Structures are given as structure tokens and as C-alpha cells.
Image (cartoon, rainbow, N blue to C red; front, side, top):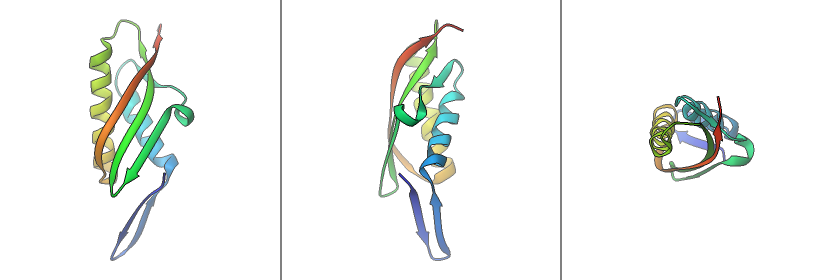
Length: 101
């Protein structure tokens, strides 16, 4: 979903691909985490500058899964708020795979 901000000075458009990149890079910034198939396992819903994100991640074996998921939530929420000015309602994280690294 494309995010559009209309202001007095013009319009700012952030494409779906850019929003996806922000989410993926923020999530994968958490040690031991990678986003599984971003095109099929990541969803963004934006309504009135509020966003809900759903993503599926793989986590390195041995990591504490709830801790990693909470860190992913925090990183994704922070990145979207900081870079796009979005109010993040929720970041739903599914751990769909363990990586043996």
C-alpha cells in the first residue's frame, strides 16, 4: 500500500516497495533474524497515517524467541515512525522458521 502525505507545499508519496524495505531492514537489524520471503510474508495496512504490520521471520537457533520478536516489533515500529511519521498500531511477528547458522 502506498503512503501519501498531502501538505500545503505538495505531496509526498512513499511506495509499497520502500515501506517494505524499511520494515525488512529494521527487522533484520535484530541479531539472528531474517524476514522470510518479504513479498509473500509481509503485509502493511495503512489507514489515516496509522499502520499495522504483519511479518514472518526466521530466527537463529538458540535465541529466545519472545525476546527476538519483541525487539523486531520495537525496531520496525521505531523505523516507520521515524522515517515516515506513521503511528504504528501493531507489529505482528510470526516466527516461522529456525535457522541453524
